[in-house]
Length: 297
Image 1 (cartoon, rainbow, N blue to C red):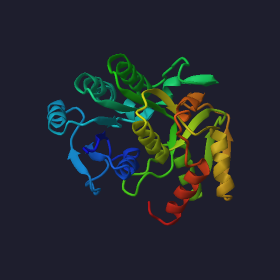
Image 2: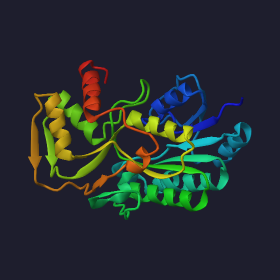
Image 3: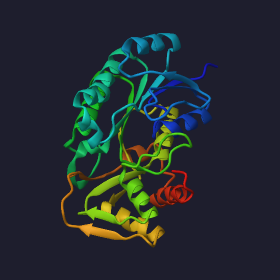
Image 4: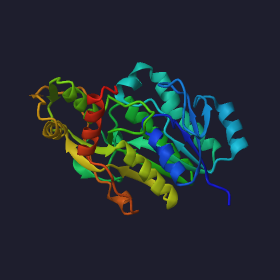
């Protein structure tokens, strides 16, 4: 029997690294397409294709040659600050490339979006809540997911919560994520300055993204889903770190931060498919602290 053929675009990144491992273990035929922006080589035993998501002629040739059954689209410029560096490039990668994909690929499309599309909302919100994107990052992600919903028949979209923790052994560790950067500061005995602290974030371990995608593919799930494990206030994240690293010093400032996002999400809709998280915030803090103490970064 022919194996299901999956292309992971952005498969060498923070989210994609462990996802490759999970899908290989599920006996799928896995291909990775990536421009290795943070790496200089790719070591995993899968078919690796070096390329840029804007190289449309090359992608078309790959679609014709390999006839992928599923494309998992992780490639993006991620984060508010990074997206403001070059707005044109952000538009081209986060939005235009996804629209082109929808117009040129007929198989199942799995797309990584973000809960940042909700912006500010004081209620516990599900997938039917109003969106209120505050940043270029959130706006381009929302535009891409809307185009998928309106123009593609077989899609699985995840609005990911704020990620934390370690992925696989190869991909870089993101230190622009709130739990990760606060853990790093605590590990190196820097003071944790928390501005406000009452802002809510839905958190999710990076490895749990891979298990959620695998579950969705196995069960042929379709639709748009929030994906997180639990909602935390920023100050609760800091206090959780202090519980595990008692030497941590926390300074709470009433000053407002530039990042005004504040939202709590429900992931009950996707949990009904049978998915459940495997990792907690404590797990993520502990594993990060260990590698800092081992001087692995």
